[in-house]
Amino acid sequence: MDDVFDWPGVLRRINGNAGLARRLLTDFFADHLPLRIAAGHGEDVRRLVHRIGGSAGNLGLTGVAAAARACEVLLLSGSPPDGAEWRSALDRLETCIRVARDGVDAVLAGLPEDSPAEGRAGGEYPVSPGTLAALLADNDLAALAAVERWHAAASPSPCNDDILEAVRALDFTRAASLLAVEEGDND
Image 1: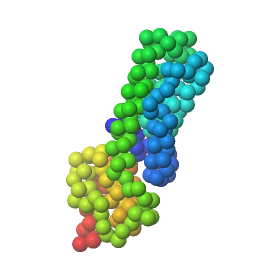
Image 2: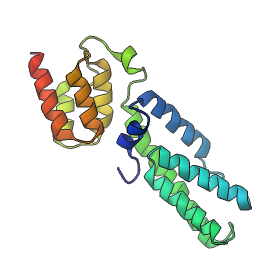
Image 3: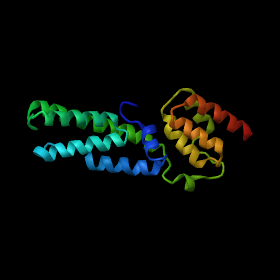
Image 4: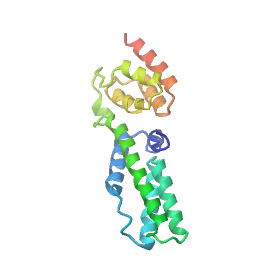
């Protein structure tokens, strides 16, 4: 999924604010899906493709950013935005946006709707520690979304914060060992 969506990178850029990431990603897809580039002309089309590429890059949508850059290069080369080569590049960009949307939706579906502070509920876990441990053991990227939900509901502790940080850095081995320590302390 890293070649489509870099969730850890997005979180690093916005200091771990998953709620802000949700809003920015939702707004991006609302603005650019369905894509409406084909109707534009000249410099307006180039600016739109450039804006899509820049926004996608900042939001960790690596595949979309690359496809937008390819469209922009094509436009800068003087190719008219109505030929077969342009249509092919535009189709690729549209496909990348749809694939990215699916990947983003999968990650966002696992996040709590509330802010982490509002989501804490003294010991009730929407994701069980056992489920989270299994995802970590399998190096499953679903752990990214699961740990956000788990962290929002878990009792506040420095160890829980370290587990969240390790998963965001894709260090599942460290996160699993920290989770084992934390759960051992709670027995």
